[in-house]
Length: 147
Image (tube, rainbow, N blue to C red; front, side, top):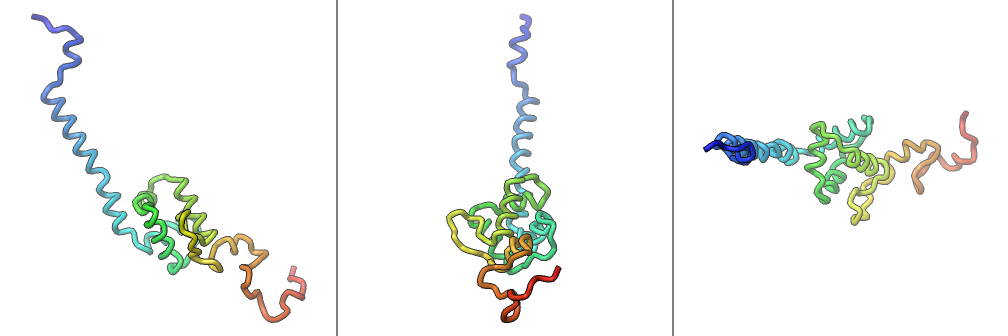
């Protein structure tokens, strides 16, 4: 009896089944390198990622450590590791920049200020200084600024 075209299209061959199972098992392994790297993403790695993201070399390790912990607390460490490996994630890059510029934890439920005087916003706003931060000797504000 001759097979019809419709019957041939729905028949699963042994070769097709083995190919599908092999492909599925290989796909499950693709997440291992990212997760392995995430476990090893340390403060120096996060600092290097931040420097690359912000294109700034003058970031402080003592600020990076609590900032990395804050990102880890909101389960973003794997995403940071992927970003460090070269993945594109503009939203996460913006979160990193916002944390460094504001000095505030990236966790929306955490009101911790990671840094105040070392927040990058003060470098961006070079016409002012952090409130309650001395700008010079007594009476420095009375003299007009140098032009």
